Image 1 (tube, rainbow, N blue to C red):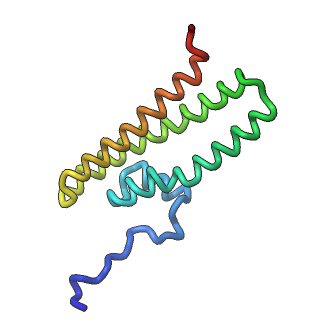
Image 2 (cartoon, rainbow, N blue to C red; image 1 turned 180 degrees about the vertical axis):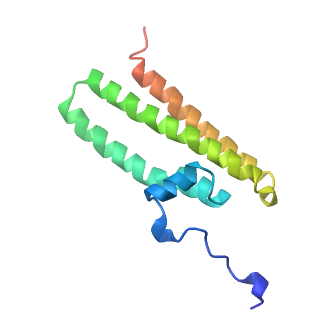
Image 3 (cartoon, rainbow, N blue to C red; image 1 turned 90 degrees about the horizontal axis):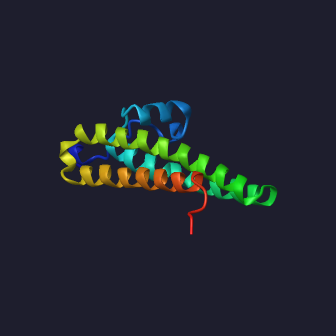
Length: 132
């Protein structure tokens, strides 16, 4: 096989993913666009979604709906802040990856949509029930 067709080694070995140093590199936009977008957005969701489900299922057994709504809103607000920082990292990384073409901006848009949805949901949870 020609040398120019050999697969590239990732900048971070898989054993270093999801460590404190990896998160620092992720949010500082020091990883590749693929790692920042895919592992940052969807890899972290593989932990946060089940953890959030288990946490709030257990909390629903212990707390009344008002406290549960407050806890849910705080969790979602923290997730929204993380996703806002991640969107910034995806944007900074996308600027350095012109070879990806327009897809890099699609990635930025998807990251932004995730952050906005989380922020709006947190606001709704923290704002209490809608009047009516």
